[in-house]
Length: 285
Image 1 (tube, rainbow, N blue to C red):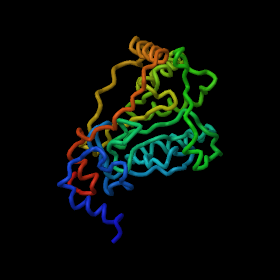
Image 2: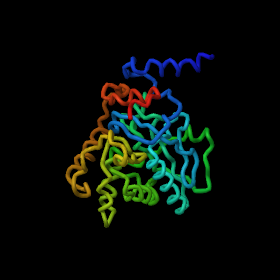
Image 3: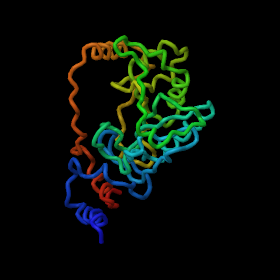
Image 4: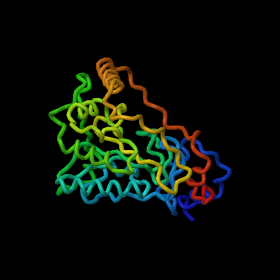
């Protein structure tokens, strides 16, 4: 038997004896754990059994950076992306889809602290024409353009297009979506331009997120071990708190501090049931 085949067998045999430690293999597991879908833990400290892969190309969307193998999620998330893709295709466009999660969720070695439970997906603002499919090389190399002028605290009107707002609104109006993260400057621009701001309630400000928006689903039915976030505050969020976010972003852009590469997310807070998910056991049920 080859060494490659012996490694998974070794992990399975010693699953109960091994603690979940950083670098334990969440990013090297190639396939989801088979079975009914169930989310375990929280968005930033969790995992998923029964995840599904998002096809790399679909009607009105295409997955970016597929070499990362981060295009897995709960079936509800996969269906949402596919539905948003069809709606975008009806408008003549094609969404570019960033990271969902790893095959069994869990912490990633870089790029995110959340995206661990199969309920998160990044969607680029940049779109392609519906009839254009990018080459594999392009999906790995094309950069996400920022949609803001950070030092001015304004949206970049030379890049921002109405279809980006349409895609964001379509996602926010999906009932299974719990919240969406965007850069505070983008939300500020929407607060100023929208006549009906009720759909902005789910759109929350966060650092970064100037080139993409981050969709997060609520805990799905049947996932009793899923840990939800606190409820959103009432209102559309076009308030003094948002103005403070924008002020802080502008100050940070004008007086940048040295960047320190963050440590990979810790596995210390993962639920014990994630141990069995990682190593292919049914003990998590």
